[in-house]
Image (cartoon, helix red, strand yellow):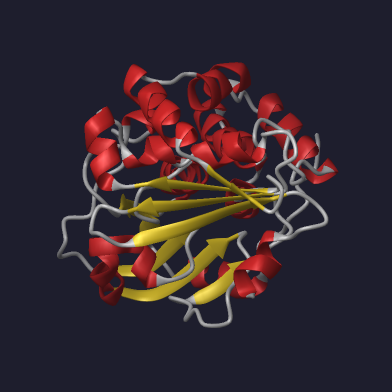
Length: 294
């Protein structure tokens, strides 16, 4: 059996030991890493004696409906109190969007994330942040194994965890494709992950509306610094014109970063509430963490 490279820290284990009811959360406009972690734990934790609910509404974005368990995990009713909230792939409350007030109904909050924290961010709770991890799903895997053993990771749990790993490593093409990432992928396949199926759905299939968005956005891309930097912009108006969804715009930055000669891709994406987010993809020797900090 292949070992997981990560271990649940002691403080996180104590928070979980002191909890029976758990609210599972990820950021607004969820991706495969955040939602894959949430749904994997949503399937596994009830088998270990926890009562769970997930934050959000009762549906998933169409791009993520292939993930298992979303119909089986209760959705928070907006009134219940919980012993613990777990924020996957998300460190600050603001990223929960309109659901952020739910954290006030939770006695403790555990953050599980792999993005380097920013100096001006205020964490929503107790941080288990591992910037060296290729995906948050690998931390979710460690959490599940620590509490219930590898036997708790069945085919559905493994597939959800593999989904986040595959997407965040770009199909095992990004620099985040470390030896640990490959070992974790092998472990999840051993546990029954439907690797080729979920990778095809999440990384290759696109709706016609998403293809129209791709054409419009890439056609308007701006190049700077001798074409080493490419900038994309995706507004809500453009999404409406194409009939595309916000989550279908998320992956465009990976396409931009694959353009020959590009060292940095920048995407400005307008959210549902008029706020703008900036996503970055960099190739060595440039580093996203340093650029974002500067």
